[in-house]
Length: 248
Image (cartoon, rainbow, N blue to C red; front, side, top):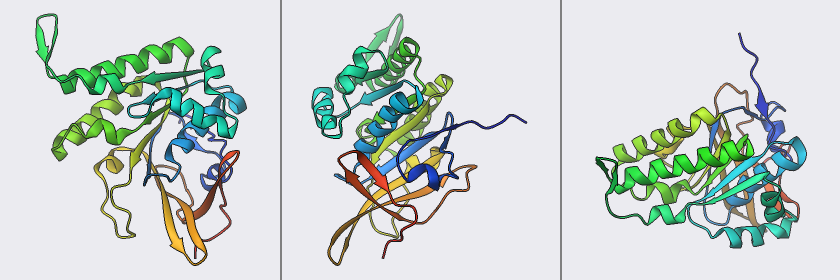
């Protein structure tokens, strides 16, 4: 029986909620949250910590936001992504042009649909960058943008599965950032939650005295994780989770 290896997030509070060890290496973990909850911050903090704390290079795939704006925003936490890019420790892929391919594409003698070509192109770019910098971590932001082009549920599920299958050989521990479409406590599960090996949900709750940010690890296969919602804050150093506190 092989010994399971783990990837520590380096984010205060999260690793302790995961048996003190972190995420199993090679897992695909979905990060769900409503706008402004800190999803992108969590993803980039995971990559940044990988480099500076654990010597693990990473890839950031941006399907929606402009890379220059993201890099500028992250400087508020002291995370200089451009410097890490220049040092070949982080690769940032601007995948937004792929989304705007609207016509069928001819590959050799074969004609394939634009959506299929977009997926193939995205996977190939990720593979190329992974080999170039020897990446161990991967963040794709945002999966919601990717699946918008698949209106039918069956198509969405197949597209997500194909994406996960495509990046699986890289053995990167992957965070897929996505919008939380149902925010109530009795919310419906989203299709991407079924195919991911882990699910972390970020939410904002209105309480007496103001808004409380909470983080819940809803799923992490094979890990005896803390399932209770825990409060967190976005500080000048990034996200900090308080695993010993409860949400009232």
